[in-house]
Image 1 (cartoon, helix red, strand yellow):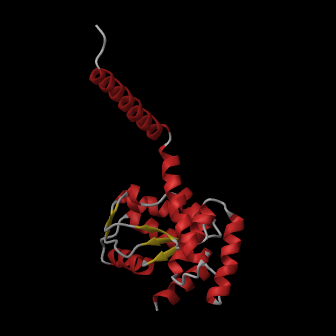
Image 2 (cartoon, rainbow, N blue to C red; image 1 turned 60 degrees about the horizontal axis):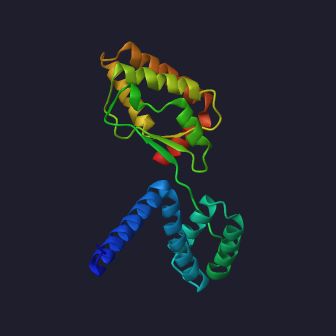
Image 3 (cartoon, rainbow, N blue to C red; image 1 turned 180 degrees about the vertical axis):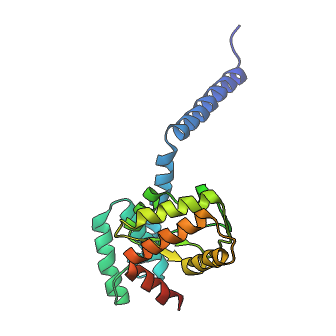
Length: 211
């Protein structure tokens, strides 16, 4: 028996919808990174257009500069720097903040950053900071790990800033004077003194920053 017109239309509609839906899912799953980068291109083009027409919001210029550097579009970045100088009268600068290692209230062995991480952070444009401000307690493992890190830093030329380290060391020394010290505390103080002696300029800069 011959098929009716309604049956033909329904069959075609089902077939078409199935192909379109599967094709879309396959493309999205194939490379989601490409989809994200295309969306980024649209945003970048929009920001670049605003900048081209003289936008004076410095955030737009910094965002665009950062994207150009990330995508290694050096020619576009150089052109943007020249335009920024013409519009604002001073060079475009992207200040990279320091990589911060914030120690917790109680420091255990795994809370002390590894030497390779500190070395890499120190070599970055913003440098590195180890923040002792919140520390109130250290486990034996934490004391050992910190002593090992300070010992390794003695040999380095690029050093992290140590925020709050003087107060931290003073509290350790106070505990030792009160008879509450341990061998790990003694070892830490000895290592820290060696570190400070090897890098007196670093110790002086910390005192100036704390003043």
